[in-house]
Image 1 (cartoon, rainbow, N blue to C red):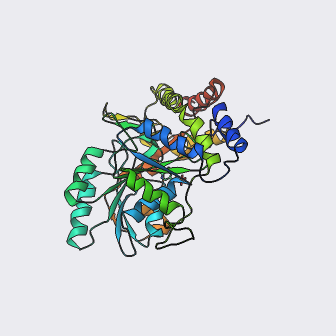
Image 2: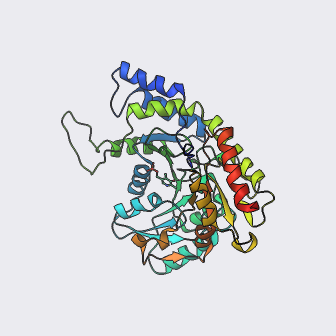
Image 3: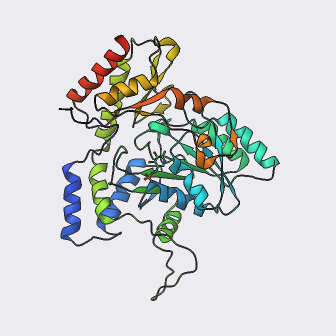
Length: 380
Ligand SMILES: *Cc1c(COP(=O)(O)O)cnc(C)c1O
């Protein structure tokens, strides 16, 4: 019999979530509003600090979409986006009829390179295509080089949307990811560090912008006894049932971060004597990653020919999930022909990188299985 599957990142729920969901049923708050929605938002606001206002939504993708809408992104506009990311960072740009322009990563955080960003902004401005927004991502929980990116963005007067989908619990120079952009988004999809089964949030810089976000997310209904609409709305609010799961998850977030960071240390230990394999970690103490996913880079010229695919296949044989790093957006068929500023940093990461099982619910037995595959593959 095959041993049970070890996933990259699976939901890790506590009893508190079930209690809040039960409470919602008991009180008949089975709707996209209610006490769990309010308390979940408050818990995130308290956690993030920096006077942010949180609107919980049906997904992180919806949150990005509403950030773009509120920044006035329209048909024909240009929006900058990190190339090395999940497609959901870029798709909402296209929902608005705008065109994404992609930027390469730098090798220290794997996120947007501020030097290529500046080249792009100078070039686009000279072509009268000044971007309306910059979507920067903290991949795998690793904060991007925010000071450098923010200073370039300010110089050109362009707002930053921070895609913090993978980075709740991470921080940069002591400030939480999710508070570093003009707008920031969070995701609570099933595979993220905490989950509401599916959901997200837009983190807003003011109470007024939160109110605007909620207005747009609930079909943009004007204040009148009948249904009056003077602009296009969306149905993007989070359900009070899902928010109940999230409320319980916020109570264990610190534990989840600690467990993911411990998985990263586990991999550093496993690979410490393996020539040609490096575990992705913080470049210095300004960066604090939740290590949502632990990842490695394999330099095949130094591993006696063991490739990324060799390791991935060895894991698969043992029913252990691992996955190549994100395929850059400028190399995706759907974004073929898009403008790209950079070289081959993110392309190289895609070719040589692998994400490893990183869940906060992995057991000692799981770790033993993972370690034995690593040992067998690299030591023979
Ligand atoms: C998960 C994710 C999203 C999308 O969030 P959803 O809640 O699934 O819509 C966007 N960007 C990144 C980097 C993600 O990992």
